[in-house]
Length: 62
Image (cartoon, rainbow, N blue to C red; front, side):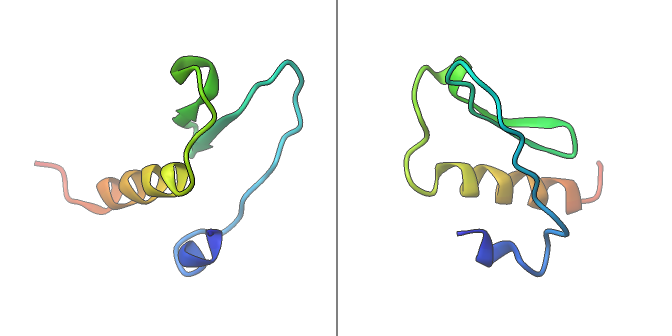
């Protein structure tokens, strides 16, 4: 899945945790939180959110 971002994503880091925590952050911004949603993400859900955040950061402010 990350293969679709290979030209736009420099690196990805997995940080092990305990207690059922699953969070995805992009440049410090929370993209997905299992704790907040109460569920594990559906296939493609996190990828879509990451792509949306990356696209939004490329748009000029205005």
